[in-house]
Structure formats: C-alpha cells, structure tokens
Length: 470
Ligand SMILES: [Zn+2]
Image (tube, rainbow, N blue to C red; front, side):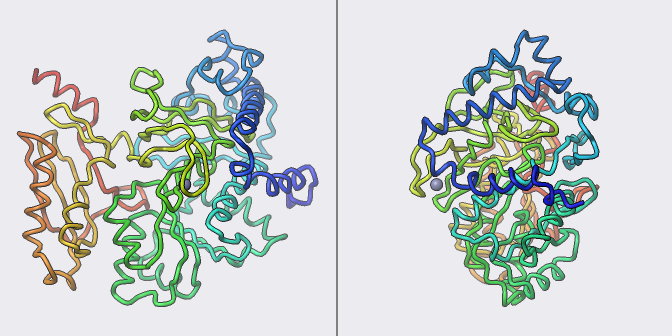
C-alpha cells in the first residue's frame, strides 16, 4: 500500500513540507538553538532504545536525562563505521523495530566494508524537505523544475532506494514527470542525448561526469541543454573543472554535501561560495586523530549527528572520512546565517598526499593545476588526474582536447609549468612526471568516475616512512 494513504504518515510529511524548508531563514539564533536542543534531546532518547547506543552510553555512564541540549553532545561517545558494521542488523535499530517498515541503504564500498543502515519512509520524506529548501533558495519551484539526477542506481544504493520507495509513492500525488534519473554507467553520448531531449533546469552529477558533458557540449552536442543550475556532491570539485563546466554551459556549478549516513544533504553552497550547514537537521563537529575537537577554523575529521529521523540513529558518527574546517554562524551575503564549512570539503582522508618532508595535503589542497591553466587562459585539458605512486613519485596525467591542441600555449609549455608548480609545493626529493594520456581509467568495481587525486601511499605508511627516515 502507498504509505501516503495513511494519515499517520502523510500528516507529518505535510507538516515537514510546510515548516522545514524555511526554518533556517525564519528562526533567529536563539530560536534555532532551542529547536536544536529539543531535537537533540529527542534523538538521544530514541538512540537509547537502540542496543549499540544503549550499551555505549551505559558504559560511558551517560543517561539521556543528562543531556539538556546540543552543548551536552561532548558528553557522548563517538560511533565509528566499525560499530555500525559490527552491529548490523539488530543492534543498530530499536528493540522490536519492524524491519518490514524500514529499508536498508548501503554506502558504496570501494575501500573497506560498506556500511548498511536502516531508514524509513518518514525519514526519507523529511530528507526531501532539505531538497525543497535548497530549491526554494535558488528560486526554483520544485514542482515545475525539470530535474535530472545522473547517479549510481545499483541495488541497495541510496539513489535507487529513494527512487523505488519514495518517489514512486509521491507520484500518486504529485507528477514526477519533471524528474529523470540517468545511470552514470551509460555511454556519455547517450547521457547527453537524453539530456538534450529532456531539457533539464537542474542537473545533479559527479564532477567528472559534468566535465565529460562539458567536453561534448563544446563539441556541439546538447544544443537544447540550457540549465539554470548544476549540483555536484560525493566527489571533490576542483576550480579548473568548475570553470571548465561553467564556461561550457553558462551556468553555475555548485557543491552540495550529501552522505548516505546523513540521508540528505548536510550542507550546500550558495552563489557566494559559502557552504551552509543545515544546522536544524544536522550537527557537525571536527576532531583530530586523537578524537579531540579541533579549534574553530582548523582542519579536522568530520563527525556527524543527525538531529532527526528513525531507523538507525546517527549520533557523533566518525565513519565519513571527509576533512572539514568549521566556522560558527556568520551573516553571508546571501542572507543566511548558518554554521559554515570553510572552503568546502577538501576530499577524502584516504586520498591524502603524504610527502617525504612530512607535509600532508588533503586532495582538495593538492590541485595546483588550476592556476597554471588559468594563467594560459586555456580549456585544452579535457581531464586530469594526480597519482601519487610512491612517497617520492607523483604522476600528473593530462588528457588533451585535440581540437584545442594547437590553440594558445603548447601542451609542452603547460606540462612544464604544471611540473614547476608541483615541484615548488612538494619540496626536494620528489619526482614529478607530467604525462599526456588518452583517457583516465575508472577504479575497478565502481561506476563512480575516477577521482582527481589518487594516492597509493596510505597515510599511515607515509608516517612510517617518515619515522624511519629520521
Ligand atoms: Zn551564503
């Protein structure tokens, strides 16, 4: 049966739809704080009915009645990825939870075991409120906007679960004809032809997918694609790719910060380039390697708390391996005053570059190609990848657009400048090879496009080598 025919489901959803999108604009600082305090107390109380949390909290000597508001979050122990994996399925949901009413969603596991958690219909519905908020923010009417999501629709992936279990039910009430999902595994020419006939206003895709589409657009494909906004998340977006895509389509490419465990976007980028956290839905913290909170504005590992939802609660969860620098609420030019992720997500911790001189770069801070290509005012690099093969050897792979090969600065000049830019940053004793290649291959077992920065040196391994060199 369609759960929306049940008023216990449809009424709260309707309430969410009315109240959720505008909340971060409507409430002042103190009102928002009170809202967060209340939501947090409720979610801790709920988590206490879930064996994983119950046992952890008991061991730490914490009872939900000790939690008076969000500031008390520091009293609670962290929950790791391993905790969720080891306790799946029965210990990550309340005792007596009706599994038939929940769905299992799964993180994509290219490294390590994937994490599976439970969500339910209402939780997905509330997550949709976040999307509505973001669309309202950009003056996009979510009923009329033609929306395409180019994603990974494999079994158990969150995109597919949402499509099958949520969107299909909504369709009975609201036309979803303006929403199209496209599998990222299709050939790129097929994708752009589908887009051309659908004429989307908004496209959501991986940065590398946008880059391929932008390349084809430059070659004359997709004449009818006149989008209003591009959204990307789930992979790092570097400045060059952003410029390349925005220039080809004449439309802004902005970041969102989704995660499977969050069940929604944790933050989104406004037109002023600020990453606003949906602080009425989430609490975000940043910690160092020892699990201590880092000072405001300093780089740390993200710790996520979801202030809403049923199924598996997510409270002080450390299993997402993103780097963040957090700033307190400050009025942005766009009018929002939310907590901020300064400079956005700097990439996955596992793709860190560790160098012989002891420097560590998150992937997002290791893209020194942009200034070079910007200097030569060129878009002849169709795609690139930085591969750390060994601690002291880095390959920089460039794919060149043949039509632009002989326009402007030569490939050799660009390669030489890129090499110099990197040598300046990495210090002595690191070999930099800039190579032209015909394509950049995907990693095995994934349909996700290849990342921009890859490291075959594990961060710990890097530390070990550093120690032994002392
Ligand atoms: Zn803003």
